[in-house]
Amino acid sequence: MANRRQELLDAAIAVLGGSGIRALTHRAVDAAADLPAGSASNHFRSRDALLEAVTERIIERERAIWEEIATTAAPTTPAKLAETLVEAARQVAGRHRDLTLARYAILLEAANHPPLRRKLTDGGARVLAWFLNWMRIAGSTDPEREAPLIMNHFTGLVLHQLANPDPGFAPTAEITELVPRVIRTEEPS
Image (cartoon, rainbow, N blue to C red):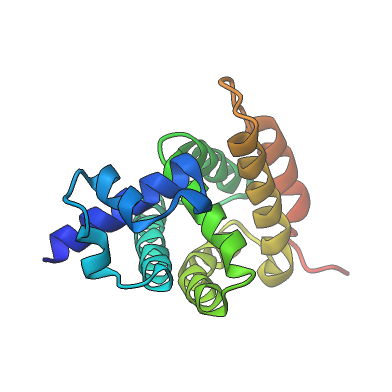
């Protein structure tokens, strides 16, 4: 039963990523999962229940991506942190494009749906904790101030790539120039 639920949620992510929030219906999820009509509505009785469950699944899948990156990256300098972010940008805008598009669709929906907003805020806290730790390891003396500057730039780069796909997507120059400029490795005098 849990596998069927997960299969339906992954299909819902594919629908969101491929066609947007308006396309997310129980019927579309059933078709994307190649399951009989009514399968999604048996697990998620309402659209709100489907939205909340797919939000949780997006968070779960993104957490797994960040955990994989976190276990392989050791950003001990601003330059190494920039390299890690370049690779993350390529992954979320490339291999995990549908998942990232689904997250952005849910983010917009959350503006008018407070339960989704709470789930996203709670889910993002762990990624933020990793990123703040990476900032400290890279030498930041003020990660709480500097992290949003870098992450908002990162988010903008990814959003631009998703909205206007460039087959030669190369965020290296922008990220490797920005990160060392933002991270203070010494206390101001």
